[in-house]
Image 1 (cartoon, rainbow, N blue to C red):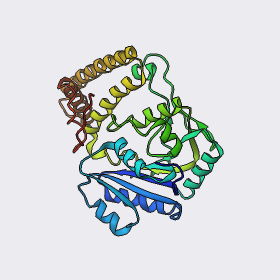
Image 2 (image 1 turned 30 degrees about the vertical axis):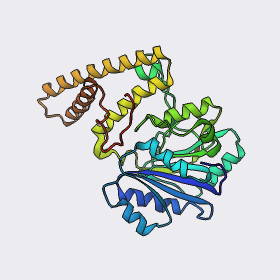
Image 3 (image 1 turned 60 degrees about the vertical axis):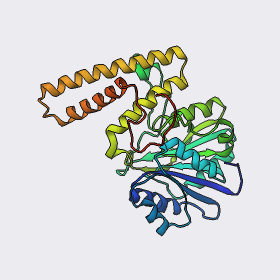
Amino acid sequence: MPEGAGKRFSIVIPHRNGADLLLGAVEALKAAWDPARDEAIVVDNASTDDSLDRLAARHPDVAVIRNRCNNGFGRACNQGLRQASGEYALILNNDARLPAGALDVFADFFRGHASAGLLAGQLVGPDGQAQRSFGFYPGFASETGIGRKRRAKLPASDAPFEVETLVGACMAVRAAAVAQAGGFDEDFFFYFEETEWCLRLRRKGWGVWLLPAVKVLHGKGESTRPLRLNAQIEMLRSRLLYYRKAFSIGMAAFLTVWRVLRLMLNTLSAGIGVLLTVGLAAGVRRKASAYLLQSAWLLRGCPESWGLPDKCPRKRSI
C-alpha cells in the first residue's frame, strides 16, 4: 500500500456471499466517493452465490480479487491493502453503507492530525439507533467479570475523540500507519483482528479516533447470521489467540484457563436448563447448543476445520 501512489482513498470491501448486501454497499459508496480520486476493491472469499456476476454487470469499474477459498476477514483486507494505491484506505463491510461526504471528512481529519492512524464513524442500525462503535481493550476485569468493567458510552456530542479500539465495520487507515505497524494479523480468521490492530497501532504511536459526526448505516452481523453457531467457535478461537498476542505469558495462561472453566460450567448449567424445561424453551436450547459446540471444539483439540466454512488452509495453533 504505497502512500500517495495515485489515489486518495482505496476502499477495500471483504466479501463472502450476500449479493444484495454487496451491491447495496457499492451503490452507497459510489454516491459518496469521487471516482477521479478514489478506487474500490472487492476481495471475494469464494462466494457461492451470484455476487460477482451481478457486481460485474452493474459496476465493472470495481476491482475484484477472487479467492478460491474463504481467506477470512483480516487476510482478505490485507490482500486489498496490498493492491491499494491510495494515500488512505477504507475497510468497509458489505453490510455497511457509507454516507455522502464521509471520505472528505476522514481525509480532512487525517490531514489536520498528523498522528491519527485509524478513524471510524458512528455506526447506526436500520432503526436509526446508535450501535457500539468503539470500546476498550479486553482486560482482567472484562474477561473474568471480577472488578469493575469499563463500558463504552455513546458519545454525547459529535466532537471527535480518541479511543482504544474500534468496531471494524467501517475504518479509515493512513497508508503510512500500515507501512509502519503492518496490516491485520493474519493469525486471526474472524473476530478480534481489529482489536489487535488498534492495540498495535497505538503501541506504535498512532492515534485511533472516533468521528461521531459520520453516521454509517450498519446491518450488524448480516453476513454471519445464518452461521451463528459456527461463528461462535471463531469468536472463542480468536479470543484465546488475542490473549496470547496481547498479554504476558502468565496473564494469557490465567485468562485461558478461566475462559475454558467458565465455558464448561456454562455448558453444564445450560444442559441442566434444557432438562428442566424438557427442551421446550428455544432460547435455552440455542444457548446449550452454542456452549456444547464450543466445548466439543476444545475437547477435540481445537481443530482448524471447525467454525466458518470453506476456510483456506493455514498453519497455526488455536
